[in-house]
Length: 254
Image (cartoon, rainbow, N blue to C red; front, side, top):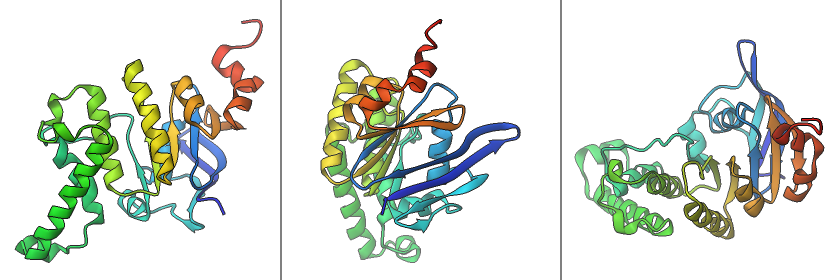
């Protein structure tokens, strides 16, 4: 049984078919990439899976249960957590505080305990801080825990957002353009980190424009064009697919 099943998923904005009847599976423990030219519908597809926007038709299954229609926080609690192409960090909070926000989704202390500041809340806050520090260490940002996010360069802010997603303790990690804005050195580090996360047992679904990164880390690739799936398969087969070559490079005459 696939971990995630996307079945005939569509999202229309008036006459625009941003995602049009797309289906694919994501097996447990793999890295699956979604690629395509600008405007292909990749981020919209992520938004549909993560519950950020509503579907027009179709369904998403997670562990054979329908998650279509759930709120983003409900999907995150079930184990599907995402990052964003445009960073969603609180620029006025510290690095550690931003990551701790992600970890609070696993909090067991109730609203009343938090409001009354009871001892069990103190203990849990300590555990949240400790786990968040571990995730910052994973992305090599532990030494910058007290720095305000707004004072970090873009590449390090991306690392903080990844640490926050990991702090949610996901089973499936959705990475939306994680290499966007990174230099060659940072992209290489990202590649090694994603491979490391796979060895932890994480299942990773990634939207990415950097083809060298995609071909380096992916087990399977889905190609979108104008909202439709035009190809799916292993990276080496996708590289040789005539439809894929045409949308990226044009036809022979061009």
